[in-house]
Length: 197
Image 1 (cartoon, rainbow, N blue to C red):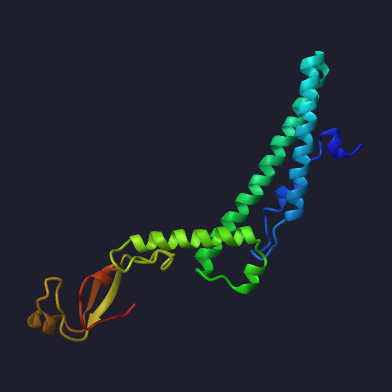
Image 2: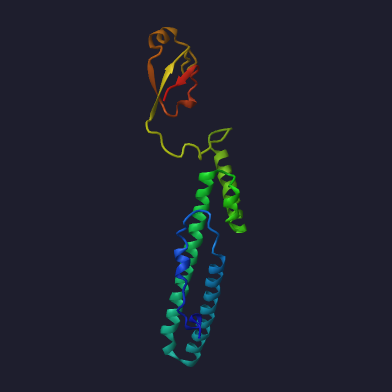
């Protein structure tokens, strides 16, 4: 009698496989296949025991049925945790490497994972195009927040204000003095300004 026939064999190594050492680990297709076959065998054994318990009135089978059911649920949780962890890691690769993965990373992904990556890449690109007007907004840039809310800049020529006016008298007085601009000031039309960070 194999461990599967006893109804207690589960694959803890599949749960432990979620802790990849690196992103270049091949998927555990054989382990997943074994878990799915085991789940199918446990389910079929449970179905036959449930039918026998109902028709023959054998209540002594109920603890075994429950035990197999718990094994089924545990195997399901392990398989889903493994697959979800892989998807999270593949999603992180898009943010780390951009829309084109290096060939060594693509080599270590299954065809289904590459398909999911491409779908995620397209969804993210569509979302970024919908932000920020005509050009879109690349949200994969500047992943870390700025150290300061303001950047320091010095005017080296004429400065146009947001209304488009030039102020030469103020310019002479403030020339070469540092100015604090909001970090998102790239949208403000200021000409001839050199940022000194």
